[in-house]
Length: 272
Image 1 (spheres, one colour):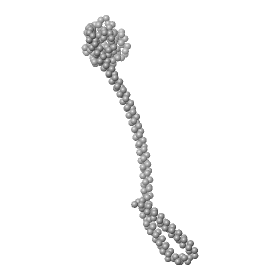
Image 2 (cartoon, one colour; image 1 turned 90 degrees about the vertical axis):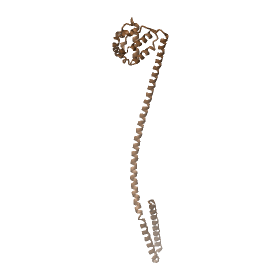
Image 3 (tube, rainbow, N blue to C red; image 1 turned 30 degrees about the vertical axis):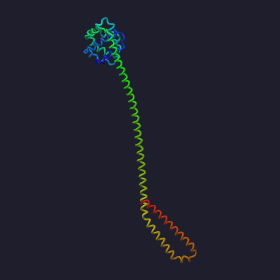
Image 4 (spheres, rainbow, N blue to C red; image 1 turned 90 degrees about the horizontal axis):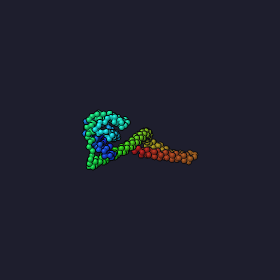
């Protein structure tokens, strides 16, 4: 609390050039900071450096225009200087009442001595310069934090966009999987039908040797009977035409036999 008020006093001092004003405020600072009991009434009310600076500037003006440095000044002095026009500081002035009604004259007695040496003034200037550097450094840090915050906000927005794209891609993949599952089911059904068909063909092929043997027997029987009766057939009118017809039927039978053997062979090779 006390350190905050001291910083406010120093913030005002850095812009003051008149020696008298500088000395008065320095001594006022020393007096106020030494009276810690009264500071408890209003030390936490000043909320920012602008309010502190306004208050101290008005306080300096009251001190310079007072008839005597040891005279007590009241809230009316501040009203006369227009300090109460700032609504944000009304609560501050109300809180100051207890302090101003206290032993304020004792504090003013401490203002009787001026800073007389160059060395003392130089020390104050060096302290103010350091304070200025500290404030500038803090301001730069604040700017850096704001810049980092903006950067992080942009990165967060990009991550959210990326997350949305990933969610969309995931939905697309799910739809593609559903389509593939449907196509796979259809292909499996077709494959089952083809498997059933070929199994039936395989079963049929198992009977082909019987069919071939039966055909061979019929052909052999027909040839034997034909050979036994060939002389009789020669005596029949137009026998050469009948013979040609028989030969043609025999050739057709041989072709049918060969085709049946090919079908049997291809079927048995496929399921071997």
